[in-house]
Image 1: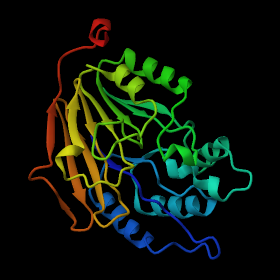
Image 2: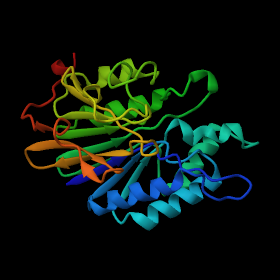
Image 3: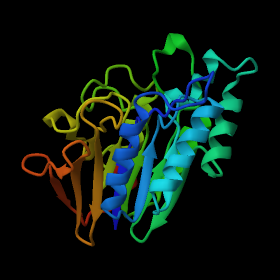
Length: 272
């Protein structure tokens, strides 16, 4: 199974004309390159849009035009940026808009593919004073713990904002970082994949292992170094590769990581 993971496309259209902003043609180029790699699944890990109806209209037209593979979505902080324009804005409005355009049935959910469980988490609110950090409700955390507690296969967790103090530039990026780390600590075959920071993927700080859990930082499809990360899953390995959409090449020399599937199982004592 081959999963393309991209984030931070930031599709935006001008309010007065509904025309794409100047950065959008580069996003078309990146989506085309992703499609050329024939992924089995694409995960859009937050900040697909700037939260407005016109942005979603533009984004979903592009996504459906370029990508044939099934697509999963998480919310990012920018999906809540209707705060700055919508007169009747609310967190619920932002979430319903996201669900309506993406076609998903929930902003957090899990899907199983054989021995691999994909878990999609999403921030549930926004306030300017939060400096774009993720806030996850107690209900989402309870759901997350129950979703992973009995799972014995590989676990890929997608959350737009990284857990604090993990990948590059992840200072104060998620309010519930301690809770998430406590749920996942010492769980074998677990990968937490984020975006948000707009940091290049091709740096050592973007892939690390802590307490047996791998934290994998995302790049930014929008910026001067547009990159996506591909996850290749075989029966015995999980491999992470970086695709550079500007040069149309794989950055494999120092930034291809292969992790063997551990035969361990999670027990109550493992979790403390």
